[in-house]
Each structure stands twice: as C-alpha cells, then as structure tokens.
Image (cartoon, rainbow, N blue to C red):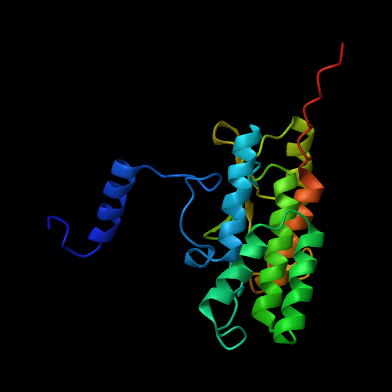
Amino acid sequence: AQNSDLGAGMAVAMKDLEIRGAGNLLGGEQSGHIAAVGFDLYVRLVGEAVADFKGEAATELAEVKIDLPVDAHIPHGYIEGERLRLAAYRALAEAASEADVEAVREELADRYGPLPEPVTNLLEVAKLRVELRAYGLTEVVAQGNQIRFAPVVLRESQTLRLQRLYPKSVVKAPVRTILVPRPTDAPPGRFGGQPLRDVPLLRWVAALARDVLEPPVPARAAPVP
C-alpha cells in the first residue's frame, strides 16, 4: 500500500529480496522456470553460480569507452526485434578478440543479410575496443578539436615520439591523459580539410596506439618451489 507511485515495483522487489533472500540457482532451493529470464541470461547466471561454488573468480573484460563521431548502430530496419538487437549489441560488447568480432559479423550476415554501413562501423568499433584494451586504455573520447586518451603513462622516449608524430599533442602526466589534435583529411603538411570521422578516424586511433603506446607487461607468475 505504501508503494503505489511510479517505479515502486523496484522498491517492492527489493523488500521481497530483503525478507526472503535471493535463493540460489543450484540445489533443491532453486525455483522458477528458465522461460522467466530467457535462455542466454539463465546460462550466464548458472555459469556464475558454478564458478562461485568452485571458488573461481569470474573474469570480466575491462570496459573501454569509445566516444567518437562514428555512425555505428544497428538500424531497426536491419534487425526489427528489440530483443534480437540487444543480443547483437551484447555479443559485440562481450567480444574478447578480433575472432569473436568476426564470428558476430558472420552470424549477422547469415541471419539478416548484407551488413549496412552503420553495422559495419559498429563492428569496427568493437575491433578497436579489443585492440585498445590490450594497451590498457579505458577512454578514447572526442573533446572539441582534440581526442583524449586515458589512462596513459609515457616514458620520455614515448613522449618525444608522440610530439614528433602527432605535433601539438598535450601530455597531462598528473591525470595520466594525453590530448591529440583531431586529424583531418588534408594531405600531410597541409592545413584545412574536414575532420576525420567513422572508420578512417577509428583507424587513426588504432595507428596512434601502435605508434606511441606499449601493451602493459603481464605480471610474472611466482616460481614453483
């Protein structure tokens, strides 16, 4: 009776969770039916429950925010069902390698036909996210006439290389950020031109990462006695 306003369903659900507990997915206390949550979510939840039972830590991919002027989305006319579009977005977000992205590309082409340009761009964004994750980046964001990369820690030699290859770049060491002028389509050494966008801009970002940054060195395992 107290929860009758808009959005009160969440409050009721949280109170129910508090009173009865969350239950579990494994064992005799499990109740409900797979259709209530959907097959994909059910499989993921069971996998997490099994990993928790075995004491295995669930590995999650580091989030990489890419906010650039790129027309990357799945048009409603290409995949009409909202649930199917969300499933495709989720598959790309969970892609851990370029092979995973290519697998999504093949599935989309097989199920829905030739990919329109916005979907192709979306796949390129997913590929870039995989590559940037290998360099430890979590943000590549358009900021006015500059592109912000973070977190970035450069040695002196890397800073010199950045200034040589990408003039007028700014290194903000205290906040582990670099600001690089947004590229244009003007020939090298010429001024003017239109700012790059879409796939050419994504390729420029990937090239900068390869030119200047270095993948983090993985921690060495302790020697076995």
